[in-house]
Amino acid sequence: MNKRALIGLGTNLPFHGVGGPALLVQAVRAMVEAGLAISAMSSAWESPPWPPGVVQPRYTNAVAEIEAGTGAPLQLYAKLRSIEADFGRERRERWGPRTLDLDILAMEDAVGDFGGVVLPHAHLHQRAFVLLPLAEVAPHWRHPLSGETVEELLAKLEAADGVQRVAGLGGPS
Image (cartoon, rainbow, N blue to C red; front, side, top):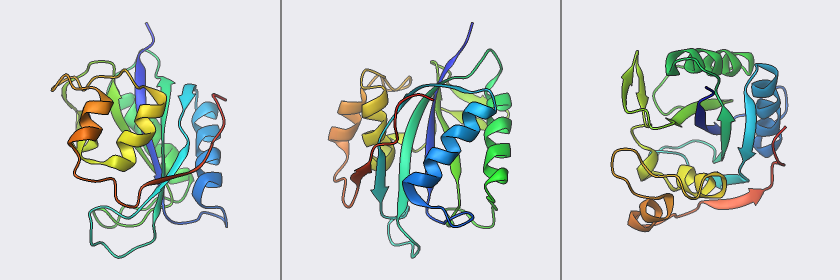
């Protein structure tokens, strides 16, 4: 049985002259080429860097719902890391700027550490730049630990300062 997964996409550095929403469109194509079927795609959202106070360019973020196949979270993680590498991603510092970031936010109702892949993503409930696009893709999704909906998680945030919808990315590819 195919597992549904929610993937966070982010970028704040161009790759081969392409950045922002256009780079995320290319990343979605690369995910499809890697065998990941996209069932839903959010708009692109622009946000300040995380954590607050970090000095670097603004981010463009989105969320995709995919059919992840029947494999384990670690297999999906490896596939996403390979796509990141194809886009020039270098991991030099925590929360550093990046050409492409692909995070597994959730995979079905999986909870726990799966070989270094923690599900659901440890910080997704704290980040408007994840929750706003997630609300577009999976408005009825519930956090498997708290049971809260995306709307309830958004309501708990103090603010979504500086996070704004900037472009549509198109539907499933």
